[in-house]
Amino acid sequence: MYLTHLECPRCGQDRPADRPQNLCDCGSPLLARYDLAAVARAVTPERFPLRPADLWRYRELLPVADPRHVTSLGEGWTPLLRAPAYGAEIGIPDLIVKDEGLTPTGSFKARGAAVGVSRARELGVERIAMPTNGNAGAAWATYAARAGLGATIVMPLDAPVICRRECVAAGADLRLVDGLISDAGRRVADLVAASGGAVFDAGTLREPYRLEGKKTMGYEIVEQLGWQVPDVIIYPTGGGVGLIGIHKALEELRELGWIEDRTPRLVAVQSTGCAPIVRAFAAGEERAQPWEDARTVAFGITVPAPLGDELILAALRSSAGTAVAVSDEEIVADLRDFAAREGLLLCPEGAACLTAARHLRAGGWIRAGERVVVLNTGTGLKYPQTVDVSRVPVLP
Image (cartoon, rainbow, N blue to C red; front, side):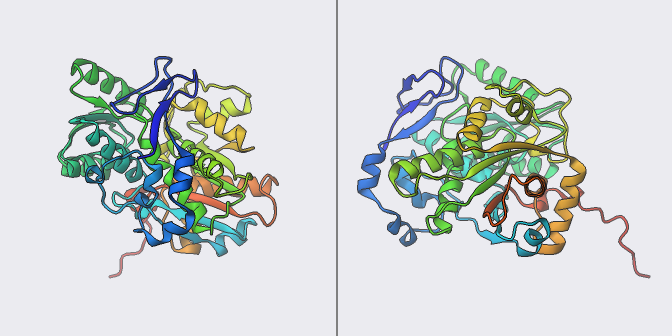
């Protein structure tokens, strides 16, 4: 294993990676660091096509030492799908969708769960707990069951019902709160504190290895494009782990010398009903203030106070990117338009990225001829309410 230590991006303090860790003493998430020079000597990009088509093909850049601790359901290596009809309609002929809806639990959360659970198991964790807007809880409950770990999942009442069912089916201890993910987070903090160390907090960015699973989306995009980078990557941003992870992957690839210095401009997409990152980015601030009365049809990005706000904003600025808020009405309209033109039912969070792409191209921020990758972070089948069938005629 090439993992060397954990590093705090805020205060610079190093932490050992050989034991379970949560946040730094300063309150910042910790990032996994690798001996990239040794990785470069051990493997080259030409080796990856010879390996299985899952995220573990990048094992030298992942934190699990013993292959016997890997917990996998075949996650990763999701397709890049070109969208010529919709792309032509909005002025982006080279529009590509990375479809994370094809992962084992139906969303990109399976990546973080696979690596996070595998590393937790390797470090001796026996029970995890986490707040979730739905998909992450379903994924972590599923992978915890496969690894033989206990799981307590706390979820808002308004989360997609299918995610509740997935947790229950996986044997998790599911608890519901009448509130937002921030309220669920407080319940998890109380539970972890009361457990005396018996329960490990696996909430978003509160442990360092979920991010390592999510970053493999960045590796895959580059490899699937022939080790070339797109001009723009557009990502729906709630907790922001996927965007932070993609940025980390691109920086690692650049240090390895596997891509050139030019990296994609990153775009964080939020809803006008919950846009703390967009507001902070526009104001030039380094931290985001909590969003009051957060609500949106794109429930996965309803995160009023993301723990990784500093890292999200830093990734946007260092990549010359931007942050965009779009309305629920536009999200639903673009979701349906895209499905009719391209035959793919996106999740609302993925559709939000299409809306952002349309606005950015209309305003000239995305230039003519640029290659744009949009992340569809989950299957639209988990959100049946986004398609109205009330007016479908019933035949006599």
